[in-house]
Amino acid sequence: MANNLLLSLYIQVFQTTINSSAMTEGVGLHTGVYGHVRLVPAPADTGIVFRRTDLDNFPIEAQGHNVARVSYATSLMKQGVLLSTTEHLLAAIYSCGIDNIYIDIDSIEIPILDGSAEPFMQMLERCGIRKLRRRRRFLKILKPLEVTEGNRRIGIYPADELRVLCYVDFPHPMVGQQKFEMVVNPENFRSLLARARTFCFERDIEPLRAMGLIRGGSLENAIVLTDHGVMNGPLRYPDEFGRHKALDLIGDLALVGLPLLARVEADKAGHALHTQLVSRLLADPSLWTITTAEASAAEAEFVASALSAARPSPRCEIPLTPAK
Image 1 (cartoon, rainbow, N blue to C red):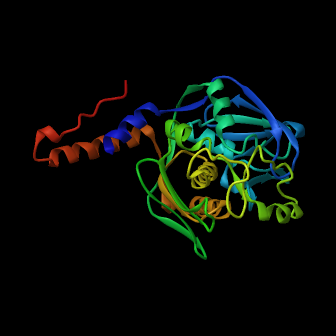
Image 2 (cartoon, one colour):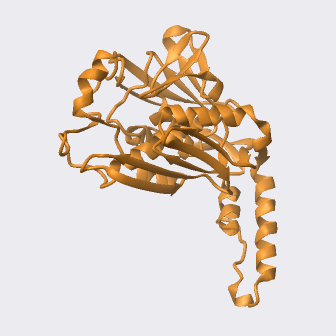
């Protein structure tokens, strides 16, 4: 594990941004408002920043202190300016290791597109990634933190990489109990999570619309579950529901504001618990430290050397070599 960490951090020593811009457009899932999104390169130490171009480029930083409300999506608000359904786009950006980016949008809600992060991944692939001349900083968890609400729970624990474990349990023949675990990196996200779509139950559609939600929802941007099956199959993954919950979790973890070195376990959690965890974590600096890739790599090499020295046979040694 220490060797893998060293190689990973060797690659990600410097901050990143995108190399060029890309655009997309579509309807918002909950508001039904049509909007245009443009991804724009940003300088070092900018972070992930939304800019409402319909409001003189008003900036809303993707950080925990700007979380406005969460129920069926994660919304941000700054000085009364709202932005809804940020999680899918943030999950793609965060998993790709992009530290600095402007997200220009001319409406109140990020377009839902096909209900997954796949279209955003395609945008980022068109943009490309550029390294910047500034050391990358990580938020490394030192002590565990858990948040519970009834039978729902989420916890964050020390680790040398970002790993998420998501458990869901819906009394439905197509869902039931599903568990999904993954180390978060661009390759894993692209192949294992990006195409997992949001979902809802047919019986909940009218109540949600009565609440002013899912005005832009359709069979093209969400999986709809009937009482006994799926209205608009086939599924993209057998456990697409659990995978999408993991996707949502990663998007909400992006609100920490820095790349995480942690293990996060979510048991029947949702946006509300995700963002509670982020808020409580940031409010207690004794739980974490900020480190650079250079410092973490040195720590990893020390651990690996100690483990190697403790082995009885030299044939078991794993050489530490940088990524080519």
